[in-house]
Amino acid sequence: MRTIVSSPDAAPPVGPYSQGVILDNTLYVAGQGPFDDKGDRVGDTFADQVHRAFDNLEAVARAAGTGFEHMAKLGVFLANMDDFPVFNRIAGERLVAPYPVRVTVPASLRGFDIELDGIFYVPR
Image (cartoon, rainbow, N blue to C red; front, side, top):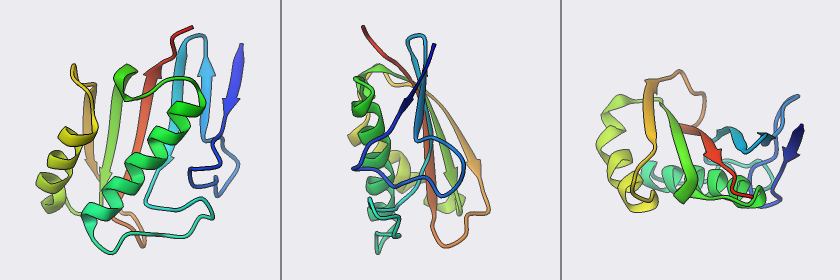
């Protein structure tokens, strides 16, 4: 069974996709960037953008009944790999051990510097 998940606290989709989808006990969260609940870009600094992207990812996870304590995989897309140390520091503050697996990919993001997606276990 497939369940669509959305949160009014995360950025709305800008195309034909869902914020999150649960299949069995697994939540897949679409890419979340530094955008507010109206879809406007926020964050004057890279660190601000990272926090907002994490806030959006967490909002969708919480709407599904899970959170970072159940994250299995984190996808990280960076416009500039030189920002990786700042991202890594903030990730250490926001995530819960044992940490999820992670992939970090350089990406051609337009008008923002980071996007995150994730896979979570959803306890029943």
